[in-house]
Every structure is written in structure tokens, then in C-alpha cells.
Image (cartoon, rainbow, N blue to C red; front, side, top):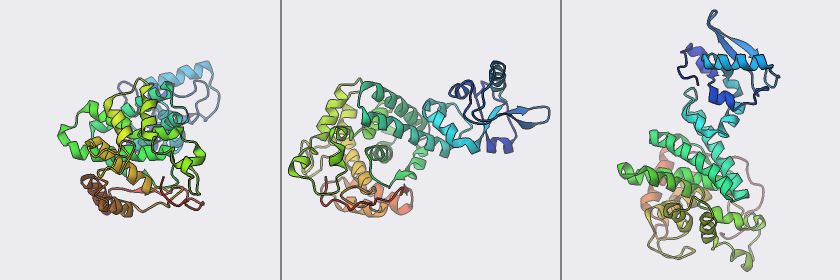
Length: 348
């Protein structure tokens, strides 16, 4: 946005995005990927300037920049998919682009987190962890300004075919919701930031388990099954090789499969931290509402009820919140593509 963007008629702002310099900089300089319009103050109308993909001359590039600085450069909301793709790669733009609607910000944020987490899952090295951490910091800043914004994220849980990426993002959203409710005004920003990162990458150790085991629909062999319980320890080891390691992030990774009765893993401990309990409930719920190789997806209320009834292993203080949210409609999931494979018998 321009430093002092000019007000434009409501009918224009409803159908077009007013573009600022940082957003313009995210586009290819000579071939903008969407149609550009400028606001002609003389006739008080938007005038088409260039078509998407058309090559601009040096003079046009300068002219577009000047329109931008004057607060007169626009793109159509009909091109929101392209616009969102560019902002998702420079996510901090959501904090300065006041033309974005909250629903659009949520869509862009989820897309960015999924893209960054996919990179980490495929190659868990410092470069991609850093990029992910930067985007998490943007989302937590957005939520810290108004924690009620999380309600829009809760309406967009993933309930289709299971993946590590969707599992991480679901757990991130549900876990932060439970954390905000539990801590209230006692929640401190540094802990909030670290917990958010830990919840998002809590299952990163699974990236070291071969995909054929993760996706296998037939029963696992004893050797294949033995590779599953160490994955929280593997995740913590991966994190130790980065600059992001701290006790809070590690806690979410190490504790998300621990259970109150000691039946969990890898340490079989019963003295589980609050974040560990939240991670356990959020992770289990997130998995249950997705279609996994060994189990079909459960409905939100069905999954929440099952967790609440399993109070020997899962903290009912948190599972009851999920159950209430599923009953009230506070939670919603996108079912996505239906799975076509037969579920494998037995849990991972």
C-alpha cells in the first residue's frame, strides 16, 4: 500500500485490491501476472492499464510504479488466486495490506504454512526451517493482535486424505485455540510463538519414516511397526540441528504421543506438561478427522466425543473444549478428496 493511500469509492474497493509498493515488488517487474488498472481521478473510474502476462516497457514500469505511489494502482479481486499465491510467498504482506478481507488473510496464511511445512517435510534442513519460522511469526503476530481471528482458522480444518502437512496445520490451529483458552491473560507472547512452531512441526520425526510405511494400507510388519514409536525422539534430534531448538518447541514434539496413563511413547511418562497435553489432544483429533490409511475419517463431533470419553489417556479439560466446539459449530472441516483405498487394520 502507499504510505497514505487515498480513499476510493466503496464499490471499487469491494471489487478491486489497491496495490502498494511491497505488493507490486512481489510481481515480475516486466510481466505482471494479472490485469492492472489505474484510478483516473478526473473521471473517477478505474481504467484498464495492462493485461496479465503482457510485457511492459521501461516507461510503463515507471508509470505503474508512480500510479502505485499515488495510491491509484489496482488489481481485480477476480484474480485473487494469483494475488494470494504471490502474497503467500511473502506472507508478512498480510500485515500491511489493509485491503485484504479477514477470510482472504486466513486462506493466504494457511496456504503459506502448508507450502513452508511441505518444504520442511521434504527436506528438514535449516534453510526451510527458517522460512517456516518466519511465516509462523507472521501468523502469530496477526493472531496476537486479535485472538478472535483464530475462529476463522477453526472453520477451515482439513478433513480429507491425511498428510503430514495437513496434520501439522490442523494441530497448529486446534492447539493454539486450546492454548489461548487455557492460559487466557497469562499467555505470554514468546511462549505463544514457540508453542505455535512446536505444534506445527510436532510430527516432523515422521518425515524420516519411509513413505511406503506411512501410506501402507495393509497391516504393518513387526519391523515396520517398530519404526513408529521413536519418531518424537527423531523429531527432537532434527530440531537440535537447527537454530530453532528450545524447550517449548521440543516439548510439543516429544510429548504429543505421551498419555496420562503412561501408555504413550516414546518415554511412557505420566507427568505431561500443559503444552504436551494440548499437543496430544490436538494431534489425535486432527488425525481422527482425516482419512488415514488405517482408518476412515470421523466426523468432528464423533472424534471429539471419542477423545472426551478416553479421559484415562487424554486430558478431558481440553477434549471437552473440542467437543463443545464441535457441537456449537465453532469447528468445521473441508472434506477434500475422498480416499479410495481400503483402510489398514490397526493403528500406527
